[in-house]
Amino acid sequence: MQESSHAALKSPWPNGVAERFAGTCRRNLLDHVIALNERYLKRLIAEFLCYYHKDRTHLGLDMQAPDGRKAAKNTAANAKVVSMSRRGGLHHRYDLAA
Image 1 (cartoon, rainbow, N blue to C red):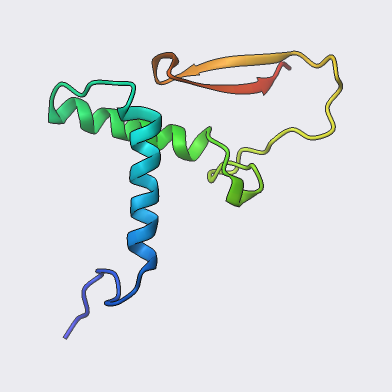
Image 2 (image 1 turned 135 degrees about the horizontal axis):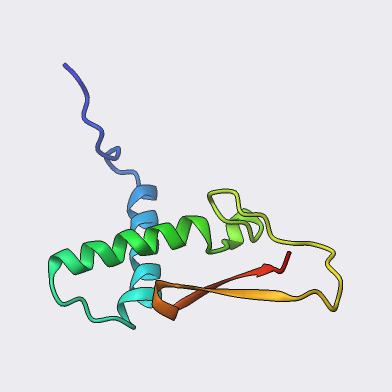
């Protein structure tokens, strides 16, 4: 008999991780945008996931992004910073100019 891929019984960790992400998604996206229908909501969530993994830094990852974006260190005080709009201007990604 094959075991299902559901979380282990009486394991509190998966539920807490899901609740943490749901709260982050609500605070950073859904509190600022009105989802008009299910299709639009799915697109919003998909775009937010891309932002969450590629651009957003995480404290638990030493201010790195999950997909490997490295934070700049030891930069000059006069270095130029470029802002790139994400999610229609709701969020931004900042990088050093080349």
